[in-house]
Image 1 (tube, rainbow, N blue to C red):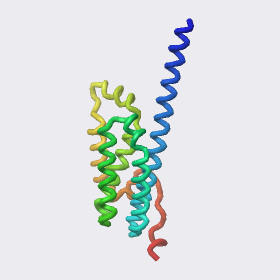
Image 2 (cartoon, rainbow, N blue to C red):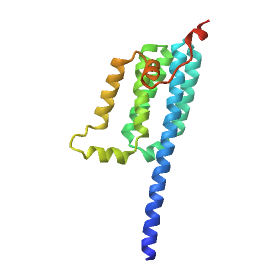
Image 3 (cartoon, rainbow, N blue to C red):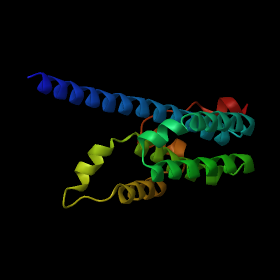
Length: 171
């Protein structure tokens, strides 16, 4: 009977750790997405100094979490997000708003992907009609690029998140 209790307690602790990891990763990805939105908003308004500061803060926070991410996530996913983050930083340095908007959409999607639960993905892939996550991500990315003009347009029209009025910052 004692062995059964130990096994059940171990299982409960592992499930709790998995749930805590999921909550932590979701919170981090939400924070990174919010910082990315601040970068793109600043770039859209032409405030490249603020965009550079926000991008530097995003990159610093991302680097601080690398050890944890490499322990809990697949390396391919982390590398993809890292590549997109460096692309966004390059576009901010070059002040290329169009390229930044495209890369930011891809990075936001990658942050969403990082926050997903791996075991749910595995269960999904067992279905006969399942598409791999990358294929679904690319379909969503293509749909967003075709339907929206920028990440701000996607946020406002697609997600219902209103941005501050740009006219007040232009005066």
